[in-house]
Image (tube, rainbow, N blue to C red; front, side):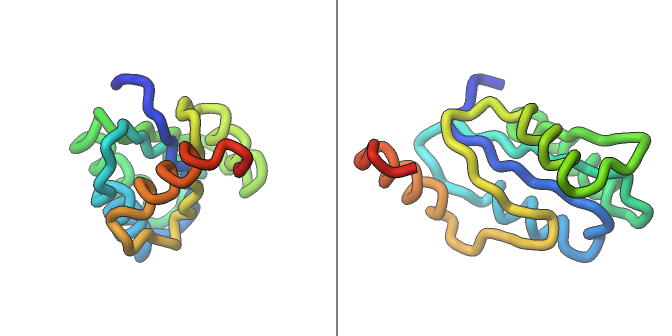
Length: 119
């Protein structure tokens, strides 16, 4: 994987019914730059981990899966996932949320690049 311009940080715990749509919302993004999806899977007790593993196997060039043998809780899981990101820019999409616009990330990066006083 090349160094991405943007990292999408996704934390998840027991989001079995939502995680596939969340991941698909990131994978459908149309960008002229590299992105990565870093998933902090927090030892879910439902099928979330298996779904994340499937997507990570199918998209090793885009998805970094951080799984765990213990439950960290939301804040520590967010921090460990944040620390694994490599992009210049960061977008957050939690495991029970999703992106609907395939140009969302492109539009946001274009704006930030054109307006360096914004964060």
